Length: 105
Image 1 (tube, helix red, strand yellow):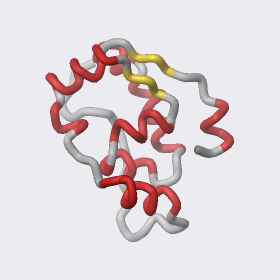
Image 2 (cartoon, rainbow, N blue to C red):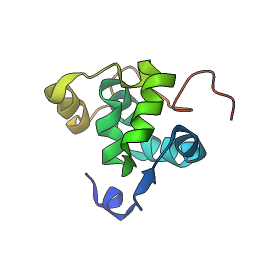
Image 3 (cartoon, rainbow, N blue to C red):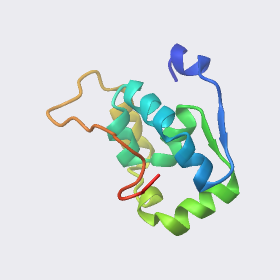
Image 4 (cartoon, rainbow, N blue to C red):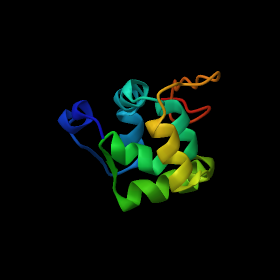
C-alpha cells in the first residue's frame, strides 16, 4: 500500500446501492493505483481492500447475487503481487470506467 493510499478515508459499504453511490470515488481510487485496472481483473476484493473500500458481508452477498462475475476472477496471490510491483504497465492498459457492466444509476 502506498503512502497516499494510507491517507484515504475508509469507505465502509453496507449494500450494493451504497457501493454504487461511491462508485465514482472507488473508480478514481482504482485509477490512481499503479496498475489498478489490471489488479481489478486479477482480484477485485483484494484491490478494493487496498484502496480502502471495506465491503460488509451484506454488500458482498448482494454483489455476488447481482454481479457474480465481479468476484469470479482471482489471479492468485503471486500474479497479483507481480503485477502490483511491476514498474511497467506493459502493452495493454486497462481503464476502469465503472465497477459493473450495464448498471443504471
